[in-house]
Length: 258
Image (cartoon, rainbow, N blue to C red; front, side, top):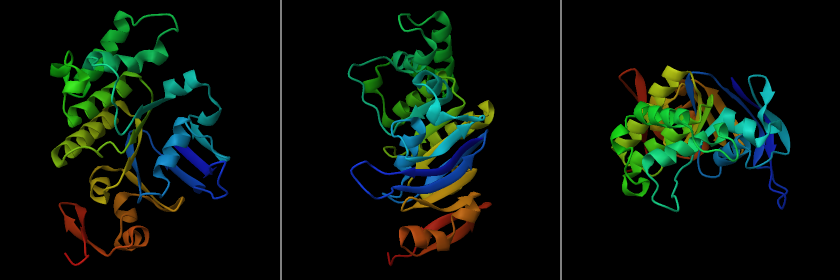
């Protein structure tokens, strides 16, 4: 389990805590979604977990180890990150982009081995984009790029996968396809997946667990149907909604006088 314990963070120039004692866990083989409005602390949590920002207090533990105390090399073997967007400087092929996920397994003055290429190609096949292997990364669609970034993270062979707003630049169809593929891979590989989302409907559909944040604190944490309630959504987003039962889950419908 990935455990975030009593996490506090503030920028040095500010006296205000952005994260205020955040605590939650994410299990192996499950997708845990951090849900909340802009400014709730979602991105800050991710930057602390990934090591980009150093919290003033707290621990982030996995397999009995505090990730915050690990070297960059060891952290790279434990955490794989899928960013919101990625624009390379050159028109690398899809295979070359995915191959960069093998950096933590390649020596400083070494080149990728046949083994590294096999791992990259296997990751490309896993996400179903083998037909794009030789295409320039800059010449494929947004949904395809997101799958390439997921393949790159998989080639890293890290047990924890962090996805920061993986659907933010995708159309409706690609949002569903990408999240469905991530869910399949999570189950198959037993990964610990933590992602941020804006859309509570997507969180309801694809999450095993939801952590709802607001103003740097955890409002609620648990199963999606227990966390994504009319009361919690009103408290966090400030709007009235109705939850409509459908096919074993619920659909969130805003009641704002449309």
